[in-house]
Every structure is written in C-alpha cells, then in structure tokens.
Image (cartoon, rainbow, N blue to C red; front, side):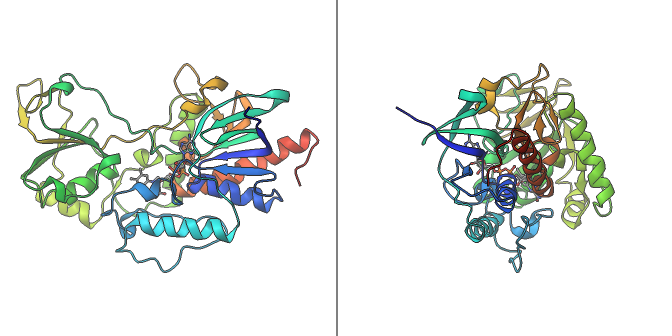
Amino acid sequence: MDIPREVEVVVIGAGQAGLSAAFHLRRGGYEPERDFVVLDGSPAPGGAWQFRWPSLTYGKVHGMHALPGMELTGADPQRPSSEVVAGYFADYERAFGLRVRRPVRVRSVREGDGGRLRVETSAGSWSARALINATGTWDRPFWPRYPGQETFRGRQLHTARYAGPKEFAGERVIVVGGGASGTQHLLEIAPYAAATTWVTRRPPVFREGPFDEEAGRAAVALVEERVRRGLPPRSVVSVTGLPLNDAIRAGLDSGVLDRLPMFDRITPDGVRWDDGREQPADVILWATGFRPVIGHLAPLGLREAGGGIRVEGTRAVADPRVHLVGYGPSASTIGANRAGRAAVRDIRRLLAEEGEPAA
Ligand code: FAD
C-alpha cells in the first residue's frame, strides 16, 4: 500500500520559481526532506532551461536574474544558456542542500486526510499541509489549430522541439508567432533556408530604449489583472514588446522581419489567405508559446469558468493552502524569485495560525 510521506510543504518543480521557494523555506528554518520536499519531473537540474535550443546562447537571453542568495558570475555569453543555467542551478541546489528529488513527476494533487493535500507522483505519495506549484510552462506547448492543418505534407514543429537553424537548410519555412522566440528563430534560420515567411496574429510591437522598472511593473500589472479575474495568463514576455536591438533592426532592414497577417488555412503545400494569396512551404514552425502546466491540480477544482486559476499574489483564491509561483505575472526569472519569497511568507503565516510551526 502507498502510505504517503508527511511533510509540511511540497514544492512541485525545480526551475527558478521552485528553487526560490525552496531557498526561502530553508531560510525560514524548514529542513529539506523533514519539513519540505522538492519534486522535479526533469532528469537533471536546470528547470526548462536545460531543454532550450543550443543556439540560444547565454548572451541572447534577455536578462536572466540570479536566484536569491547566490550570484551567477563569469558566465561565457557564447555558451548555450541551457548549459550555463543548468550548471548554475546544480551548484545552487548543492550549496543550499535543497535535496531535490528527480525525476519525480507529480500526477495529481487531491484532498487528503485531516485537511492535508495528497500529492501523488511517479515515486509514491506525499501528504502536505501546503503546496507550492512551480511547474512552469515548457511541458505544455501551445499549438493553435487552423483549417487544413492535418493535410499539410511538410513538417510542423513547435519551438519546444526547435534544435537550431541548420536542419532548415534549403527549405521554405513559415514561422508563426510574434514573440521573442519567433523573431530569434527567423533571424537564425534565414541564412540557411531557401525562404522564410513570418506570420503573426497581431502586428508585433517593438520597444525602443531600455526595459526599465516602470515598464516592467506595467507589464506585470497587465498579466496580474487577468489572473485576478480567473483568466488564463498571458506570458509576461508577451506584454513587454520586442526589444529593438541591433539584430532586430538588421532583420527589419533586410526584410526577414517583414510580417504578414495570420493565414486563413493550411493546404497540403503551404498556407493560404482568404484574399487568394498562397505561400508554399516545407516547414511550419509554431513559435506560439506555452501554457501553464496545471493539469495535475485538476482534482482540487481550482479552475474558474474562464479557464485560469484565480490567484491573489501567489495564493489560489479558492484554496489558501495552494500557491502558484512562476504563474502569470511571476513567469519571468525576476518574478519567479519574488513569487517564491511571497509564497513562503504566506504559507509560514498560514501554518503558524494553525498552531504547528514546522521548525
Ligand atoms: P521551469 O523552468 O519551466 O521549471 C519547471 C520545472 O517543473 C521543470 O523542471 C519541470 O520538469 C517541472 N515540472 C513540470 N511539471 C511537473 C510535474 N507534474 N511534476 C514534477 N515536476 C514538474 N525569462 C527571463 O526572465 N529572461 C529570459 O531571458 C527568458 N527567456 C525565455 C526563453 C524561452 C524560450 C522561454 C520559453 C521562456 C523564457 N523566459 C525568460 C521565461 C522564464 O524561462 C521563466 O519565467 C522561468 O525561467 C520559468 O521558471 P519556472 O521555475 O516557473 O519554470
């Protein structure tokens, strides 16, 4: 029989958000394994960063914030961010003795006995008084559906499976999506491909000048407003606009970033617009983002009619034992840091009110 192991807090996910939460639990006197456990479905340290394409070098990411309590110094900007961040996270876990359990995949979280939550995983069950969900979005790529999609004779892939530009040599590639990933794919692929075409639903918004704190706060407020209403969050990156850097300027000048509106249907040989225009293609690359990985929380019934989980700060409004970090407004490295701290502060208060401090 599977007898759940009892802890105060289960943290699901060991990306930026989960590690920040684990750091703050530790600093608050909670002992790993005795008082809390971090369960991570990935094979190695690094969160989703470990899966990002090799040509996404550390120098190309837009401001990765270090985790609390340990700087990331001296990283070579030419190295893949997947290696840099994975190495840094591994050091971090060791330095703070976080004892992350992996690969452990959480299958479901449901109501347990005595007001506790039961966390069922690929490696048995845990019973906890509170839960910090830090599962990110990488495992849930979003593919929009278009008429005729199944008839396409070429190849379709999502950013989640993009491995670099060389595999597109000599091909006609359509890149769908107006975010940072889409533009990076185009700029990388264009020198190799026979032709590239960029389509986006909305005209892309380019941002001049530095992304200062005020702009950051405004972007976060937009996403915050959605999750407070129980709507599925958009990514923070989607509301920050695209930085008008040298690479983007060059792409605009050369025509690689000439954008077309979304096509209306996919044909066996390419895509077509209702005005009769067609674009033949060998590949459609969907750079259409990701959605929060929250399916395992379904038994708790937290989802609103709008499809999202309503949160106040990081706390699920429908269940104060459950916190979502790295979700909606905190889906950036800096947001994830702050969310980890806020969730732990809230949970410590909740558990203290219930009269059983952990440490
Ligand atoms: P993740 O890093 O995705 O970690 C989640 C972890 O949870 C993973 O290890 C996963 O295996 C695990 N997990 C998921 N489901 C389960 C389960 N059921 N059971 C157990 N474990 C599970 N932000 C920035 O600030 N700067 C950038 O430059 C930047 N670049 C980005 C580039 C790309 C291509 C993308 C997609 C995002 C980028 N972001 C960037 C956003 C940023 O990556 C995230 O906000 C942040 O790193 C995510 O951290 P996280 O801890 O929420 O999730």
